[in-house]
Image 1: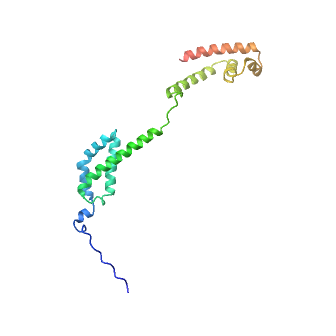
Image 2: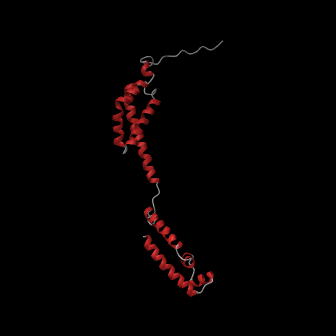
Image 3: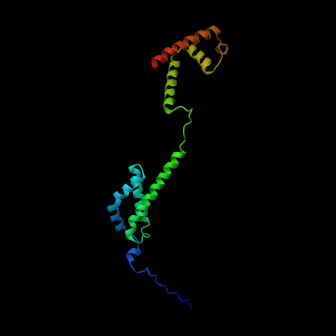
Length: 185
């Protein structure tokens, strides 16, 4: 013999108003949107600093309240829920911004700025172009002497030329570079 089902005792709130028991309707939320979107946008604008973020926050608030509309039992409280959601979402947006700013890497005080780096790159490009315009021996002597950090004797030995030739090619190469760099500037 099957067990008897217990009878359900109705709650005092049940049946009082089926519309409120179902939660806020989509139509009511739509009317709230039309009537209060601007005021909610103004609230967000007082809490945030840019229009795009304000609009995002208000739209997100409506989406969240729409998703949870069954929990908003009293349609008259829909606007209050929306306001609270706008405030909470604004706080979250500010918190994310502050955290993002804290996590940004700060340049070291002795690091060159981007402008200095770009200027240095332009100078290097001009120097390379000027070096390519030198005679082959002058370029070889200057590269070995100043970029490879060799002594004049080591350059002479590497290139198989005399020490005097290294000095002559070096001085003529520097003079030609000076002229080329001044013309580039």
